[in-house]
Image 1 (cartoon, one colour):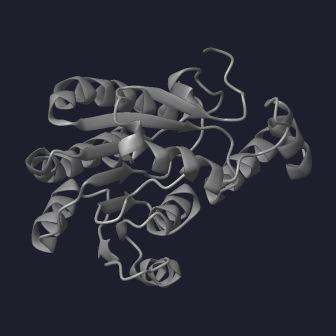
Image 2: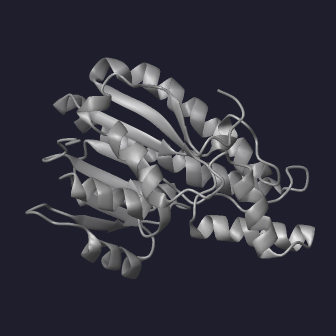
Image 3: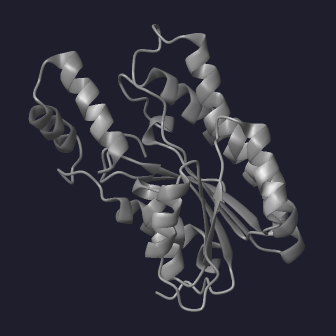
Length: 258
């Protein structure tokens, strides 16, 4: 399927690894001009060199998402305009919600909701002007079914999902869609961290924890970053123009609810 993303400019957050990197590469393969954004400049340069390039204009921006004001300044100084925004930030540390410190909620709220909002406010005016906008938030299946041991993440991801749905209602009239992609257990550095934490907590080996987690899905395996990217990139296209305000689980069927 040709998604016809030529001449579309895409900003991909958290694009130096995992789902963000896979999404940036696939967007470039589909013809989009891709701008990477993350805090590690060396990693950004490395991924930039990997992007397919057929007379496209790829670039990167360096920003720390723990500092929304600095992110806003980076966007203003870049003078770049985008049709597509991929909000994607690594999840909060695991742990029970009862034992979570207040600061953990504040940090996660800044990383995941405040910065999403900064990005949207900076990018939407251009989307309105050109009559085309796609905002995809990479969240988690926890917005449908809270995950054990991820108390802060469950809380903040739910807030982002409701922020997104409200935004979709407001922006749909301008041909701007806002959707959430909900990855299940995906083979990324984040998953490796979760498995290690569960291993320490339960006393099970890493292999045992991995096996239990894989068997929680009818697919009996972990997802690949590229598989999540396929759903994200489709939603950025004109072919998804009437899909708006929804949560799309990409989890091999693990989530028990519809």
